Amino acid sequence: MVRNNTALSRYELDVDGTVAFADYRLSPGKVTITHTETPRALRGRGIASKLVQGALEQIRADGLKVVAGCGFVVDYLEKHPEFADVAA
Image (tube, rainbow, N blue to C red; front, side, top):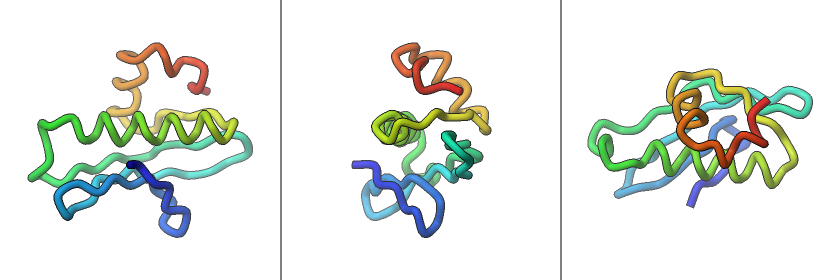
C-alpha cells in the first residue's frame, strides 16, 4: 500500500524490503511529483506504476490536483485517462 511520508515529502511503496518513492512538492491545491525512483532490483515489475496509481488516488481523495513534474508521471497520465480529473 502506498503511503504519504509527509516528513520526507514523498509517496512510498515498500516491496521486498526496499522502497520505491515519488518525491513531491506541495503548493496551494496542487501536488507536483518531481521524481520517481524504483530500486534497480524492482524494475520491470510494474512497481512504479503501482506507486504512481496509489499516489494519484491519495491526491484525488485529498481534493488536490497533480502536476506531472517527471516524465514517468506524464506518461502514466497519458496512458490512464481515468485520472484526467486529477491532472492540473
